[in-house]
Image 1 (tube, rainbow, N blue to C red):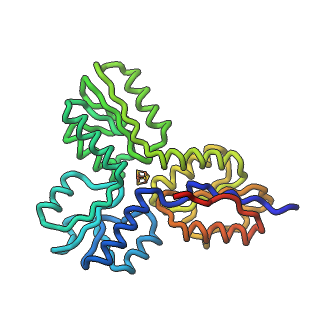
Image 2 (cartoon, rainbow, N blue to C red; image 1 turned 180 degrees about the vertical axis):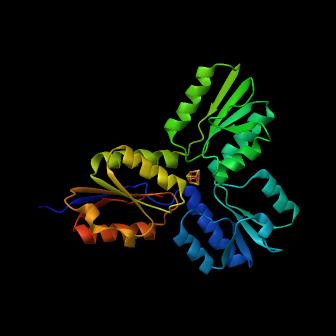
Image 3 (tube, rainbow, N blue to C red; image 1 turned 60 degrees about the vertical axis):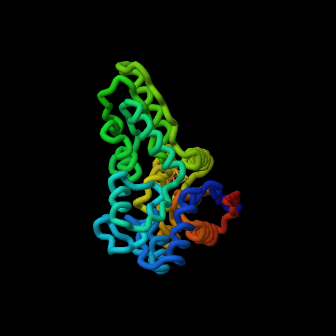
Length: 288
Ligand code: SF4
């Protein structure tokens, strides 16, 4: 039997916003002492551990920050209240909110200011969504809830599935009880590309390995997409979780990874799968 093919997604790994946030965090650690992130910087325990070794601590609540600390705001942003609290309390803020998330926040703020009720398509417990809601200043709600407003704006969490965003837009259209509807597609292109490629990959493969933090929403979405294609799908954080039996008699194996998975972890997984199966690796080269 010839060697299996191992197809590595080109979109696997750090997106622009995460790369930027990690770079800003390392820069802050080299410049300042007493540096903290509000919650883990990204949803990847291995990266968080590496940042800890550089002296970057994690606090869960802004009220847990020690005095005179430098605070790194994560790529998915923080609520307006917390931001204002940090400013008033005199903390140095390194704002690593992804520019695409910032844009979504501004859209919500502008819609609310213009008198629109805002529907946000997203996971209600996700910090990005909580932050987006805060920018609506009481006029934003999370789908499937609907605002009690005559003019309605729809905005998505940047990592939402496009299908869910469209489902919400159709839902609002079907209700028809509004005079104006504004739809802002704030699904991040890098997320949409990664999800599209994951679907294509799963169509071609018999088994798909998705690498990323278990608490990473965008990684879990990739798992969902691959499973939807009816393929054996395994979600792992690191190479040592791989079970060789997954690849028994498999001819085409796919590997992809969430936006918060660093290249070195993806590399270790690709290397392990190739060692176990003797497979030939294709793809995975990323352009900048
Ligand atoms: S997924 Fe998109 S919006 Fe989110 S951090 Fe990455 S680049 Fe920014």
